[in-house]
Length: 538
Image 1 (cartoon, rainbow, N blue to C red):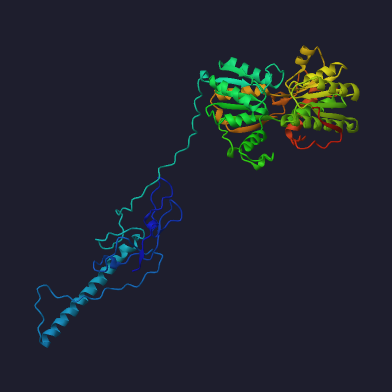
Image 2 (cartoon, one colour):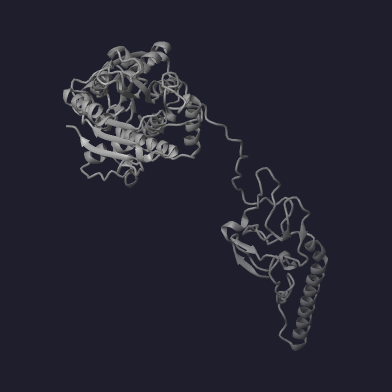
């Protein structure tokens, strides 16, 4: 009989699924779970297992699998035994022959008994599965497994229950929140970015019973903005709304300092955050976000930043201007920061597309310059005078905070036109400058809508949807009014050349990808129209 060393896995029954009947990996052949057992016809355990004197088998040994070829049965050598209380054999030859004869007879009887026992037990053995995986007790003879033999205890996995989604966290009570909006360095009456953000925060907080305040930094530096953040947090504000890319460095420094405060950066791009964080770590930033991992430099778990597809808003404004009949356009940017560049390059691309569609690309020109500041002054106004009065510019896209004032002042002298930015500036320009009908359209961002949506989700306990993310907001739909970047439907000066329906068709073409707008801000887009770049005024 072949004896093999036991392996740890040999004793475990095969469980196909929790709760199913145990199927032992012995000689039964189970083709699929639930099928009738088919047993090997070759006996797996032979009769000598029942012979007490065969051999002692240690508890760590197992019987060979039935698939292995059985060794020939080797019967034990006859044991010469003396009868109990038998007298010592006599020394005479006659008595020796008699003793030898008795011994041979006894041995023959033992052999015959063993053979008979073999044939008697063979049928039972043939119909009983052999115990290839079972273990034996050291103190007992080796025997075939019976129905009552218990396999080695094992841990049976509990049934797998259906996983249930974790309940959403309970939102904090309204009174827990206090919102502070901090201006970049301008005022909440700038009729542009700061004012739109301020009004969105104020409207939401008033409507929802949330405490609200605002801060204006004492100067235009990161240190000034950090002091404003410290003051707001010191007053118990736990949600800070920070409009403008200039907050990037302040966020990188302040967010880890105040882990329980939620920072919302509007127009704060990944590029700006990386520049601040990498520079603070003493490294040189190459202005390629793909080469860096922001998490290696700053913990953003309490920060959410949103940037806009200004290139699309600018594209729609440039496209509309040419379709509405203007051929000599100007772009006056504030500072050459990413958001302003995207507006400008998008404006050029839109004008180029419209001109090519009309077949007048050789007749359309764009003058392009940055004022290098976000407010107007006498020098910039004089520069705009030259554009309107000398160069014959018909409409200027003034993009960059209060710098539009210089363009409006110059346009008013010659009945020129303006394209507003960030918000619908038509009413503002009419009210403050008495220039009714000066604003052709405005390239708008949904600043107020963005703030209201984010604050609403925070109060509802959904901050996890925003934490640690920098998202780009742009077109969500073919319906213009549903998007974060758009032209005003009510105040744009529509005409036969460009109607509301034409505008809707334009939005649908961009949304579906029929028209593509590049967001590359490294180089001026290639165009068929003429673009004259002048760098900066100051």
